[in-house]
Length: 450
Image (tube, rainbow, N blue to C red; front, side, top):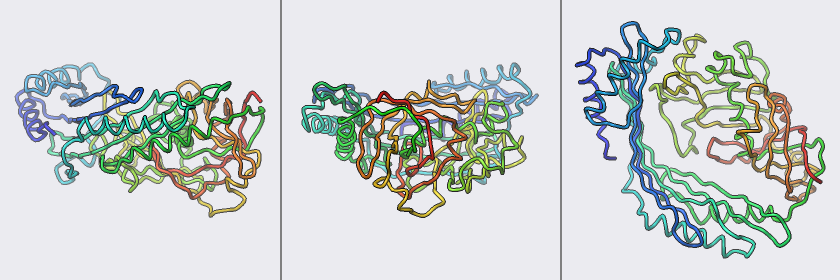
């Protein structure tokens, strides 16, 4: 990485002293990324970038906080940013009394997580793997017309936090990913699209060919489709679909959303039953299977494995240092700084509290809907009311056979859905947002065209 963070820290400290600024903190990142796509078996959309940016918070003598962001990391650019943040502080609210995290009051908890990696993978190799994968898909069968969404990418990044009290933390990451979403169509039928995404730590661990093969299989499974009659069905969510739906309603475990009265929960919801006793949920940023581990949040607070729901009971919320003070507890390391500090999960982990049961087996299900992926989460979710109505890709399961569903929507109430969980199997899968298994729901409304 070309950015010298030690020098950056020294420059900001020098500028702050010259401006009479006594309290400040900085969160930033620098990232180098290369990616390649393919179109009609030829290279397409080749990109390389190197980006660095910082968010600076400055406190004035009235303990008001001014915030600015900058990508100009020259001495002059940093000076302008500090002046702007300091001058804007007097116009900010005094109600949100932000301060440093308890983990950042001195240098005793400084950490530097480094990764040993070689140079970035060459663009030529990215192109070669992308073109080979797209060619493999297109030549698999004449039903595959194109692969409109495909990419192979590698990035090397570093995030860092430091403040005026000497706290200093940094973390390296080397993330690679690829995805392929083929468009397939049989004669006389509508086009179908599915695909697969793979994210790993280190390009040497990225199996592009396997990703393409999984995309082929998932798309092929949807070619022989039929309509489904509208009605109430037992529903099974795939790991990806369940986590996508859960994250759409993550305000109910978010302490900042509760303070803002924009949550399905209140402070009184803590230690009450919110889900089936078979359901356990953790936020696990340091999970062994997380390809993008995070050891500290944007406030510099160390992250942790947070038990959120245990046997259906809401045991904890996700906190920043600000919400932790309001709730008289400790931060869980989920803060994101800005003009307003926000809270978000890192990497969710769903665990079932039941042992395997033959009565809950995909091969034994009858007239059951399996939802592989939910769509239109931006439009089909009312996060403040808890309702959802979403189109999905999925199958109708009957005695070991699965029939792709032509087009349908699933609708229900999220909090009711959590309490209607009747089984979580043991087949954990790693997704972009966490680790989860298939989740059985007693009943949901399906609207189809059968």
